[in-house]
Image (cartoon, rainbow, N blue to C red; front, top):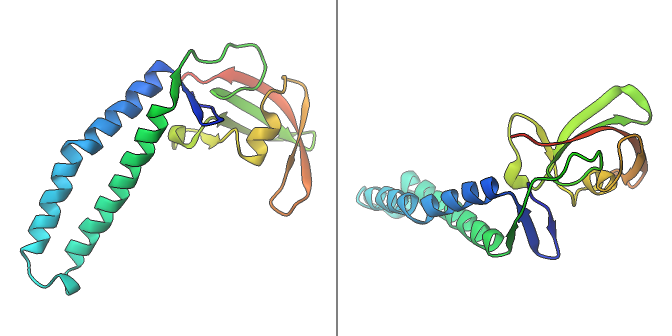
Length: 165
């Protein structure tokens, strides 16, 4: 799981390995693939009106941005263990909250950085208003966080368990 603070990102060994493998792919085989796409599009002629060329160059730009992001992330990574099952909310935990004390209006999410975002579970960063509000709270406690409109909201921590992936 990840927690970014003071430019340090905490990762489990599994997460580190996964991100390192992605970086190796993007830095090697993926670069070769995109270079071939660009070369093939160049051979089609006039680059000013060549949609395939422009799409390939845009894809290359996005890929290179991701390479830089992963490089920086891994340079500052500290590999550690998943959080302990202590009932205290921390990055790497699946958290269930109730809004405004209404235990029928709940949300379950993973408190982690965006590298963990998946379709399986909502992910909130520890730096987000909600993530920052619940981080460090114990099950049963209430937490306050700021809404986009500047008002504050209260949530009650119903559960916090380490993410099992």
